[in-house]
Amino acid sequence: TDYVWSSNTGPWETSRLSQIISRETQCWLGCRLTTLEYRHTAITIGREVVSKEFGEGTQEALTEGDLEEPEQQLESGLDLQAGRSELTGTLRYGVEMGIVSHLSHRSVQVFRDLSSKWHRFLQLSSTLPNPLTPVSVAKAAGISRQNQGSPAKSLPAQPAQDQAEPATVNDLEIQILVQKVVQKEGLITFKSPEQEIALRAILAGETPLVVVLPTGGGKSLLFMAPACLSDPGVTIVVVPFRELLKNLKTRLAEAKIPATEWIPGLSANGPAPIILVSA
Image (tube, rainbow, N blue to C red; front, side, top):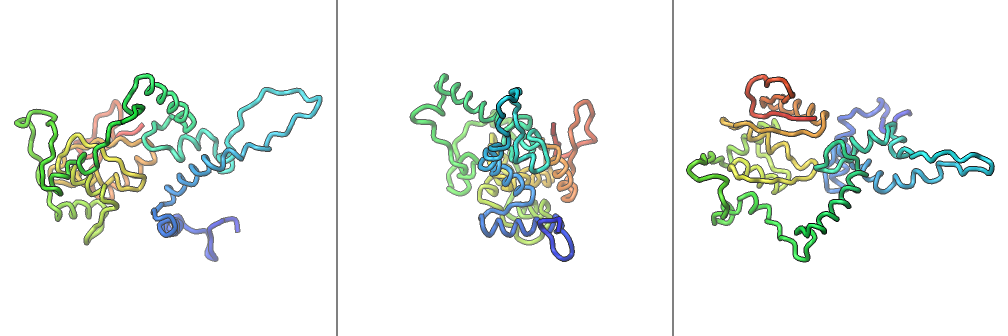
């Protein structure tokens, strides 16, 4: 057969491959990966562990009498084997979270070293013997006043009389919002306690708020669920890749959540609770 994954009826469809990958990774790794997530994972592992071995032995030694030509930088063997250039591989696959799309993995390593030297020179807290202790997720999200029964102490961003009190959302209303996003009925469980804490903090109007979740951790729910409220306001979602933007548009349309893409120089097509911005 010309296909690695196939049966008597022909090659596996993407949906079947995704189901099997999700099932096996959940079983053996304890973390459910989709086809796209597995591709990023495999390429990143290959780049970090395998790629260095690909260049060895690929350049024949010069024989006596041959003119030595200027040394050329070889493309990554791992990327060439996959039928793409090294530039495409470094910019599109296994990109670290939070890195601007036009930076390669190699550039990030160089910049990290330079940044560390600047941190030491400026004596920032990250290089001091006793760095600042990070605030716990629950306290940062302001959930401690719900679970611990004591109000969280924080400075308001503006005078109290100018701030509108956010509407209280109970557990039943949260379930209804989540059901609309995932398009399923019945009791919906969160992917992690951190995801639930973050969503409750957002719906409670906590600010400032920083949420860090892993790939596949359910970050999309955090801006899609509030968009289903009766008074959703406006949420601006910055998307690093065009393919991810297309995927979000499809998911928002399936959930019947109005959204529009911001395009420089063009006016928006009417108000929408979610505005997508991409490069």
